[in-house]
Image (cartoon, rainbow, N blue to C red; front, top):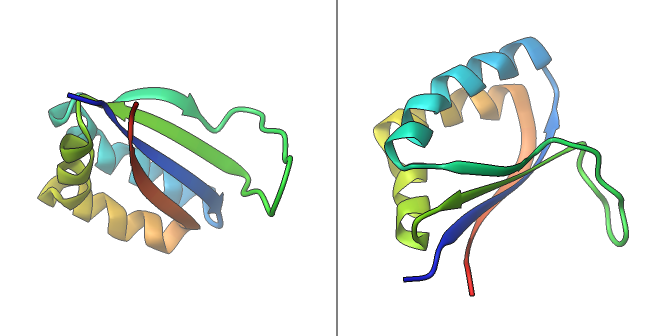
Length: 95
């Protein structure tokens, strides 16, 4: 089974509120075995418009990645994130 990855590109508008998102999302990430491969480190813009924060999270499968997003635990966190930041989030199936 191929792994699944969240790829998130985020511009944080409210850093203090974003900390609440991080804390609220932890139970969902723990439940679905999320492994953070990149979490907001330095990035080099090569093409297009970059966002300030880029995150790559590995899951055991694409379905686990999707289920994590739709979980009740994450949906609570998502509402906080949507207040504190702008961005995009996609799930990509690994090779």
